[in-house]
Length: 326
Ligand code: AMP
Ligand code: TRP
Image (cartoon, rainbow, N blue to C red; front, side, top):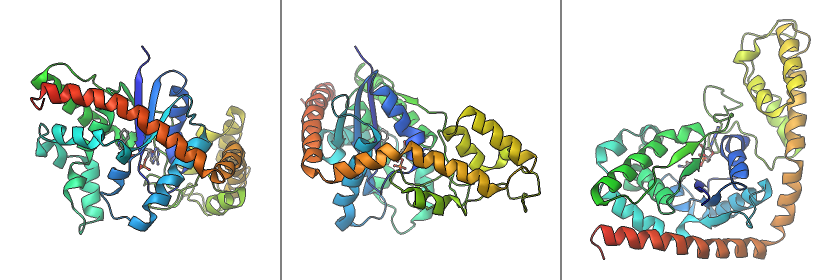
């Protein structure tokens, strides 16, 4: 039997290169080796401020990005989380065995509370319980995500372990799969991760011109004031991106040219901009085609939800039996 893989992304805008190199790159690899389910997690998207009028559009944008990036509906199951109600049903049950103290110490909860003190809701606190349910409802073995999700996966493992102990072995203990670019930093402020809401991100659908507009002013080695100063690539965010995006000989060349002040930061960024634009050229084409065919996208989601509900309802029936719900 192939391992089961689950992952999801919130519907908060088009995907950026952090999402791609942090998570999607692994999804593409895993869809050839495992039984994958990928979701747009709209219930999670409701835990922080959002615009209900934009929600449908935002979900659709993420699905288009998945498909254009190469998630193949013939290999993987694609779903919108709220179309598979078994997730939230299992989340309730798992919530009854999850100590509140486990949830209060989750770093993303504390971050969100600081960011939106006016929006501290129960859904935000129980966010990791729903995430555990997303994963466990399919008895998933592997969860490909970026590094920032590790505390959530650990909690999903703890919840699965606790359930197994209380009601008998039911769930495998899920493990994360990380890429080598598991944490891509913001172009505006490399001390923060690239994010959809915080700016400083390059979208997969950005045109070569848009990519350049974002890269040109991006922060580099702050100590390098002029072209004639030697730079330190090891502390430069642009160099970190080169290490993920560029060819080995280019990586060597840019590091050497920076260290010995053979070229300026703009020159270095131009090479990176071209590499990013080339890497996502197919993506941009494919996305344009998909944008013209909403019916095809709807059908993919309908088929996905049907398949996922079948799997999910089997797990839910087992859980209900074991927990005395019948
Ligand atoms: P989000 O956009 O926060 O819903 O994240 C969706 C997926 O992309 C998750 O697996 C994240 O861990 C991953 N991700 C988001 N931002 C980054 C980043 N800057 N670097 C690496 N991975 C990221
Ligand atoms: N918390 C994840 C994020 O912000 C999204 C998510 C929800 C998820 N449920 C999941 C990721 C299940 C992996 C598995 O990116």
